[in-house]
Length: 57
Image (cartoon, rainbow, N blue to C red; front, top):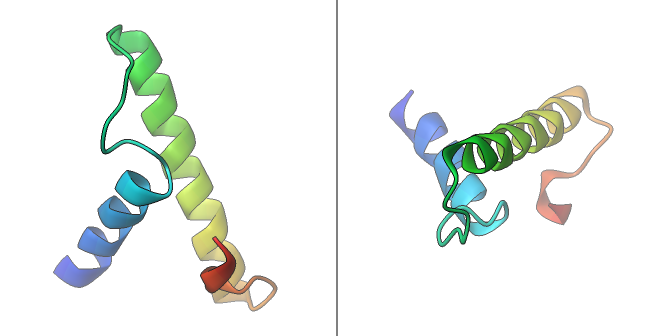
C-alpha cells in the first residue's frame, strides 16, 4: 500500500511539477495540485484498462 502511495506522489512531483512550484496563492496551488492528481488518475486508469502504456507519461 505504501509503495503505491509513494509512486503517486513521486509522479506528481516529477511529472506534475509540484516539486518546486512558483505559485504563492493557496487557491492557485490547490488548483494545480488538483489538476496533477486528476492527470495521474487518468494515466493510472488508462494503464489499468490496457489502452495506455504508463511509460509514456
